[in-house]
Image (cartoon, rainbow, N blue to C red; front, side, top):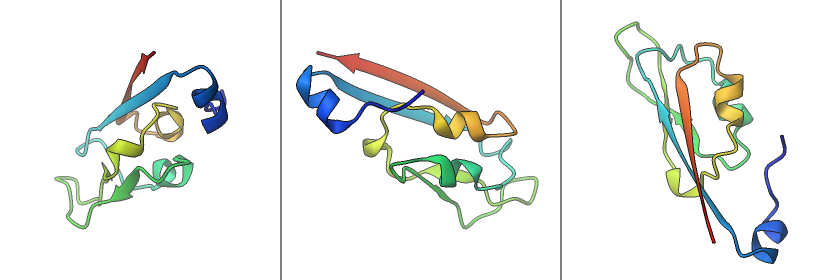
Length: 87
């Protein structure tokens, strides 16, 4: 599934807003989600989680469109994606 382009969003006046939740205790710091996110929403924390990994964190949530590329790449299923479409 491809994310809608800015032109597509502007042409039908639809705003797609996404939100992600990352379970930092499930995250093992593989960085697949960071690499997969086309908008740079996710970064890595500088503190360990309880398992001794540096987990991912949604640092720029305002950029998220809910494309779910991060969740698809996560081997630990630690990311939930929520999507809201408004006209």
